[in-house]
Image 1 (cartoon, rainbow, N blue to C red):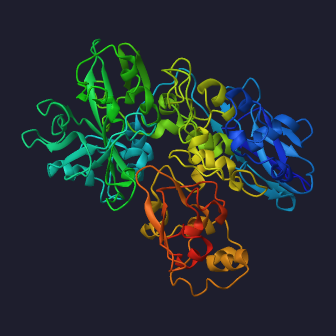
Image 2: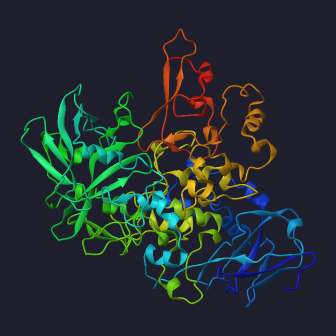
Image 3: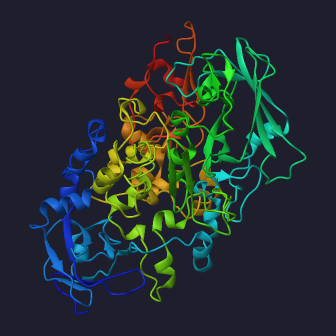
Length: 638
């Protein structure tokens, strides 16, 4: 292209190089992004309708909506070319938006995340790659088909791919090598462990109704759960692992057995176990058994929820009013129990090509796309299914992409606006409540559909939610998450999402195609600093200790600890809990007073902001780090 001496030229194209005609390239001033009001808890908790009216939760798109008529812009011609003869002063985000009639492409461009100084753009050619999308006629083909061409074997070693498994058995798309203790919970089944459920409180709002221990207990036992492995049943077959509930209160002869059909979790702090039931209509429903294994749990912790084994909704399996076991194997028209199924509460955020049938009366039944590499035949039709997050969960259904000689018709998250790219993850990592299937924790539309890849947050709020983010009790007053899978809600509040330099997306730190070790090396699990300093590369950040000196105005930390300071110890404190809390600072200052043990949780906050010492009584904070005994002087021992 002929350059512009004082301007900018370029082509708009799909990742395959196919020119994209029409639409407009906007130059969004970085100063306007900087001026956007921050997202706080009040904003997170507004209704879906109010969320759709926000002008600060989608930085680039909100600004173009409001100011596009006054921003410098260039039309894209039939060959995909655009041209600016001159450029405004300042720092600019360069973003492309499709024409109103263009249903094939999504807004953004691979340069829409980073601001460029005008001087760096003058006289240059910037070719912009934008994302296409499937049509409504596209169907899912499964990750095994995608990997024939893309060969991304590292995806098999991501938590997304190993979340649901046949107990003790992996599909070809599942590799648990990054988690050597993955089957630690199943070892208790092999050992024939018995768990006692005692001192139960059936009216508590906590999902955990009882303390759970291995014998002997110190309180009144309501029932026991025997974890068993049947050696007569081969691994991979239903019945190889099972739990047996025994009434210890009124009738020791009352026993109910449930086969463990799937394990749920194992990469992130906890593991749960699913049984299945055949409904009266012949379809299958799955339910979480009242057993949760906490990988970091310890019986020395004062809270029973932080022990190795934890109760999960035992009130669904034991009637505390009559002190009898409930038998959940037989189908029943029990909407209160049917609505607790995994199918309508959880599966949509894990399955690829999620579909849901049934209702509260007959029971809910989910299914996923058939895939030869799938982990399990979930719907019982004879074909294994992709019951974990696969390629098409983020890229959309791939049949048209597969059959298109130019390989278009697929969502490219890296070429979306930063808000749309983050919303792919955020639709599940924000604890929303949906519209369909009983308004559960799945963001289902009125016709029980999960949000499509590439959806705008505004449309997601209106089409898929009755509550856009978690409830107030799921957060601390600082804005940090108290409950798990709310990383997106933290990210929305963070400076990383709204700044004049680089608008971070989830994949800026987390590769969906590989775990951290594959991307950064095995040592990264112990020290994430290289992830941070890749962007924070000014002199004060290259040495984290120097950053600590600048922030604190002191060199007192220089000899305090001998190992390297870590960015996450202050900026990503584990405030949310998935499994168990873990001991942090033991405050023994002054030593004349009784010591106080502080705890951290096991899921990192994603606001990336250090919460100050004033919050020490409410939540985990940086100053209660396990390696900071000197900080005990800040807190009264009471």
